[in-house]
Length: 251
Image (cartoon, rainbow, N blue to C red):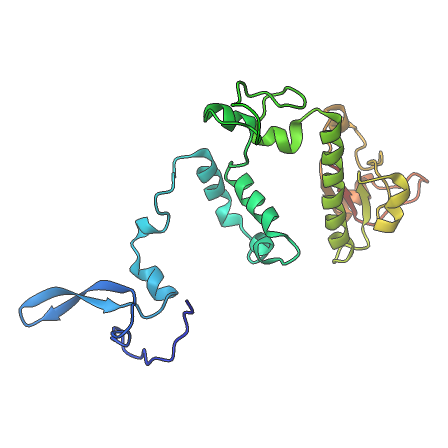
């Protein structure tokens, strides 16, 4: 139902909707006998409805002590509107993908562990699940296992393809933005395809990590070195000074 109406709502609690099926709220009024309660129509289905609802109605009967709720509640202040929620209105993303994203965010992706706990079949036409093992690699089948931990060769190839596709989108946005002239390093795809993406290398040069401490620990961070830091460590492989900011994408 639309929240825009051709009614005069200049007064606080009008009864313009008395001949229609409409939401009402209980309000306090002053009468000759003293304070009393009466019902009045909600002015609109936006701010007025939001103010009329009690705080406990905002979350309904949701389970607020779960780990997923607590973690998402922590990151809520860091949302960047409208970018953080842009995917929900992007026509290029199919509805099936959006449903899976929502399920993933709330831990509802179907897996064999869930089937075992609920005494259900993992896949149509199969018997009730008797264990929680992945049918491909025999690892513990959970949501995280499906999306990134399965050791089966076919799944590993899909993980790499998904990673490269996502990184190409990030790199494209990076090169078209204010940092387009940066020296880009990204472990994406094949070496022969890096130049077309504006990427200079797949590996971090020695002048970026001179002490190799991060490499020794097996870490591949995403770092951006400022001009000042670049001047301190900066020269390229030819020995020339390098004054360009270096943005490193490694994952």
